[in-house]
Length: 358
Image (cartoon, rainbow, N blue to C red; front, side, top):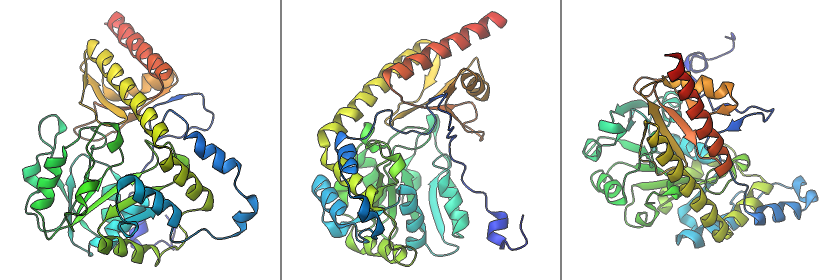
């Protein structure tokens, strides 16, 4: 602790990201990155980009990328906000749409950055308990007194609400903003982007990090009515006009353009997920019904933390959360077919050795 820290810095509990080992000796199934590279169009545009242009500031209005997203999702450009990853947009949303001391509602098990932002921006978080099998009861989110944020599919549980369920929440909170964090929506969920024109209180946030394989570029976007987008812009331009660098802009445009590659890679991940889920169930794992690019699993014969450590010892990184209610679960990112084959082989070996030791 430093004597120059203010009270907020002294008391804040920062978000802890998943491990990012630099030696690459692990099969990395812990941070929900894509197992496949970005679109070949992304590689081509970066290789052909002008080195000299890096001396110039990027376009603060992110015009070209907004145009591509507009065409892909059939929305107007003034309904789009581009951010330095979806996390930045979430932070801007907490600043733009909530006042100090105001309630903000979200599930008690969800993306842990929400709690960090609530603390950082002096909001009163209200955590709504999940029900059986980590599901959201939409009736708990109706007629609230302030804004709501829901990750759909939820993280780390992987469970998704349907579009009708989300719409029911939106309709029953006409005076409250409803933010839907769709970081994992492209792996089997139903996006509610097409409801943006119908409801002025809906903001949808997505990322390029998962389905478009650009986690290293830090790109995200929000879609909502133009007044909500203007609110985000007012925060951005009061903070940093140039949140997106030139190379990220080039990469983002080409990633959106290449719809065929996008659909092909997400399809492969979904197919692998379903195959791995089936194999895990055969060896008595509890596997939640995932609509994300990861699985949330537990086994009644080995503690989650112990399984995490044994996998790590054998060169496989998964994500373990030492938190109440989910401390016996692991979140496993879907890797390539080869990586997931090795994961299954290792898990079976661990369970077999466990049986032999009993």
